[in-house]
Amino acid sequence: MPNICRNNALITGNLADVSKFMDTITKYDEQDIIYDFTQCNPIPKELDNVHQGAITIDGVRCDAWYEDEDGTTRPMLDMTKAELIEKYGTYEPIDWQYDYWGTKWGDMSTELVSDRTTDGKRTVHFWFESAWGQPYMLLHDIATKYNLTITNTFVVEFEEEETVTTYPIKNAEEIFNGVRKDNANMRMKIRSS
Image 1 (tube, one colour):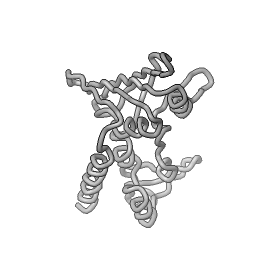
Image 2 (cartoon, helix red, strand yellow):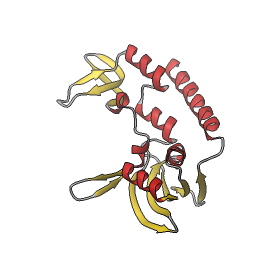
Image 3 (cartoon, helix red, strand yellow):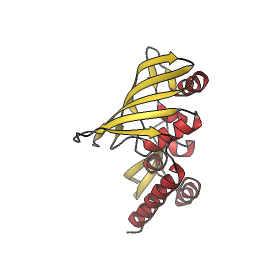
Image 4 (cartoon, one colour):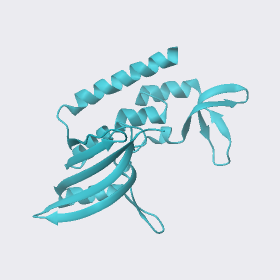
């Protein structure tokens, strides 16, 4: 079970940009409104139905597999793994989440706290949880894609100090590419051991 990170994000921009962001993250259930930041950079379809861990299928131990609607499990072929690694740097959904959101699972239990418009600027305030730390890559991606400023105040469970980060981050791609490279090297070492 991960340590939960509690996030308070103030997201500000012009009316049209914030509205576009809100349209992207807002889903309507039968009775509820659901906010999902990961819709701004969703997990690729090819990785969406991949399960990872350990399972034995027809006597063969697998670390990645698919489950069909009828409950049938199918192992992911090595050829498919190689294609996905070439395309996304990994064949495992959680690794992709770390590489593109900065944490697994993205945002969780996301709630809109307030929505205000002043002098042509709209500010939405969200409270949400994430695993282990803030989804810094996802928040940067949102700020960049939608021309927004995001100030996220967060605290990780069992730590007392609040941290504040403002997005977009300068030199983010250079930093993020370094993190992705380190993650890929770590995965390679683990798979080869």
